[in-house]
Length: 198
Image (cartoon, rainbow, N blue to C red; front, side, top):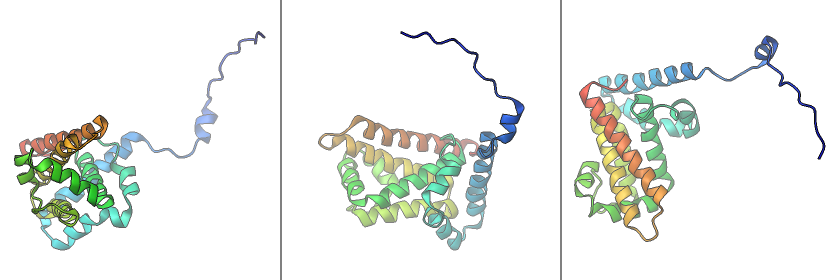
């Protein structure tokens, strides 16, 4: 075994910090994310404009889910930005795999009756009906009460989590992820009712 002399670690000097480029301040990113979410949710709900509702609905389509993730993905679940991220993620998932979503929703709706009713999915819940439901939920940001939007999305996620748990060979993490999403959205909805998020 060779012995290597110990040397002191280099300490970064001011020139190193000055030479580093990029990397936004996380606090500023968080503040900007919340401001944007507040403008979208509060501004859109005041207008009740169908055109704005459609633009909000297709925000992830036009800007890309990656762009939305960059802004909102790190936001707390009980913030407007965090809620919007979860809502767009839910829509993206439904559109990406509507057959699997329909199968999981179908498997859960008999055992989660109340949540099924709150979610408001047409009967029978096929892929097209689930897409229509998730779009209607997102339109609610501009056309309705944001707490209702969150309650409906939470109920939908709860039915899906129940369905996943009842299917053959469910994986614990998949069930838990959907259940966590349902709980986060429901908790945010209660906060919105009490004193408003953001």
